[in-house]
Image (cartoon, rainbow over all chains, first blue to last red; front, side, top):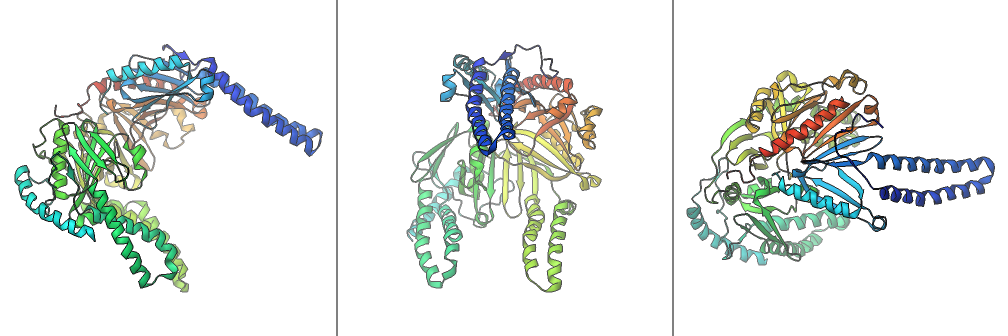
Length: 161
Length: 475
């Protein structure tokens, strides 16, 4: 997919497929009861044309399935010499540049489900509330490496506010 | 009341010590500050170097309890209020408030050392806070009306990140790094000491000399208020609501106009009282802003702490050539740099604050023609450009804003393209800065150009950060 808004000379890293799997699992967990419920209600309301209503949650789920894939593919990051680059989004495209010297703290979080899938979220905070630099899923060793690398470089390049 | 005896005792000791303190310090009173009419309430330090707040603090803080009680419980009991219930309530309430205030005061102490200010507070939950002076974003002396009348002041230390957690209370009521209350003279001395220490000098060098940069003449401020739409909207709104009922003689409409009259008060007198007198001056300790007619505020923003500046030009002010300047200071410091100023004055002031910047000389580039599809009229106003020191972006049709951010102060750079903009190969570039009124955004740039801005800005910011003023600015 050629994208005019993606700087192409960078060493982009992509997110692990486990993130996509986690999101799709969550989607299925939500979609199955929704489809079943619609089917049940439409059958009990009465017969043939109502059953077509089931297509609504099915279609929505299919759309979400595809957009999870696209979103996962679009989300990438690059560690440059002085800043971290994150590029993401399908509908709204975003490119975020966070200088290491501006990082206030780095959060690594992993919920119980994420841990099962081998995923951890890395979030960078600066003194500006608006800078939303998030990498939603990385294998825990990579997340830990990134965290340490970021804090180390942040310290080396730290500047007063 | 138990506190009475305590206080008198305190004041006597204080009278004695104040003589000693003044001779010891020997510091000239700060420029605009009236010398304290009150006994210079610099409480004597305990042997471990800790100080207490002013002994009148309990009365001002205990008052909060009475007011809160009156507002909540009092409203429920409103039906059967008699002189007796009021008296009974007060008998219980005043000692309770007094005890609370006394304890809060008794358990609050602070100490200034080479690297920071330690502040211990809390009666039940003890809290010790250490404010690192090299992280200081601004030092403010604030005097709300009541404390001002009895010669007290709040000394406020603004630190980055504070706005996120503690600014939740509306008036910064329990902000952790406030020293409330100190006597005015002591607040000024302590500020001088804090700033000197933070700058990396000896704490007793005294207040840095300063010289005025700009002032707001009262006539211009009044004219500027008269040229804003809000007061007129309030006035005519109130008149429109009140007139019919005045003609028919009912009272409901007049009551309905009261909120609008409140708004009128807010948009006229309140703005006047905040903007006159208003003086901006320059000192080795940074920018000083002294403002306020009833509530005085003296802010000091050390060098290199201004994060972003915005020049606002409301439509009606443009024939007079007046602008308003606002700024971002991390940690909720002052946000108005000048309420109303002539354009050339404003540019000169900005040139002083950010040396080497000439806003008028920076070439601003408009977005491509096709941006008119998304912003039919104001695409012409949108523009951006950069020189060696700042990035400048302009937006706003009725109120035109020219936003400046020094390269070294950019926290992060974001390129955002929503589906509509993407269909037209356009994108917005945001240069994020700390909390405050200013947001810098270059709107609707050509996609490739936006990417070039992002890359170039990343490089400029990298160089800009190198040239930053050291945290302890005199070192």
